[in-house]
Length: 263
Image (cartoon, rainbow, N blue to C red; front, side, top):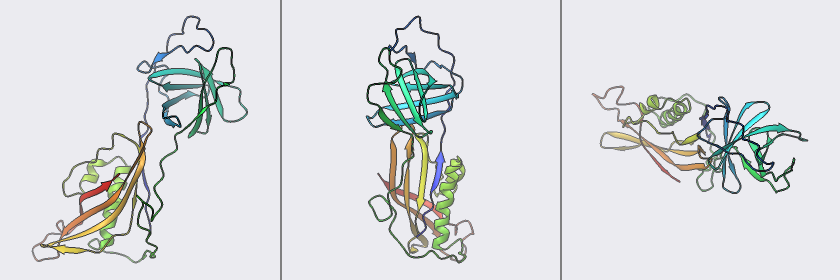
């Protein structure tokens, strides 16, 4: 079986103004800017989920600055000396990144340059799908996939419709993807930071009351904008009119009738 991973990545941008300089804060005491008030212009914002359950949003408007939003407040940190990675300090916090996907967060005590409090690990790594054959994963079908050409009305043609559907979602074309369904409703992905789909091999075509049906295994996984993971699995059920006299070419095209997915 060949699974096709598809990725829809949503990048959040935050527009920022410069926060007023706090009047003589003591070292180690966080001068807080409300998150609703911007601090720096238009940083690329990355959402991290930390091991203790906290969500951190970090923007990097320039090579010397990180704007870290934590607990509803934004803190402007400046780059500091480090042996590896990029370490930012200020306003009572230390934010130490290893690339753009992994970081360590720790509070800074008064007078500290390096945090003595143990750091908590934070990650922006994407979610991974369950392995085939495990709960929530695609069936562990090791049958070699045929490289032969297939017709649009075959079972593989139906699986191709499912792949195209998720490819359009990946491209941000939900309205166009909806045209591949019988109901015509657009998928709402507004809660997702990333959205991925694995599509498995189709089942056998079944007939009922002048229509043909086929099921295609699907695994959905990704990360939500709040930093949590999203996992659903199940199947796409496609329908088309049988090859009967009087049926039109449009009626004989596979369309997704519904997605049956569970967490």
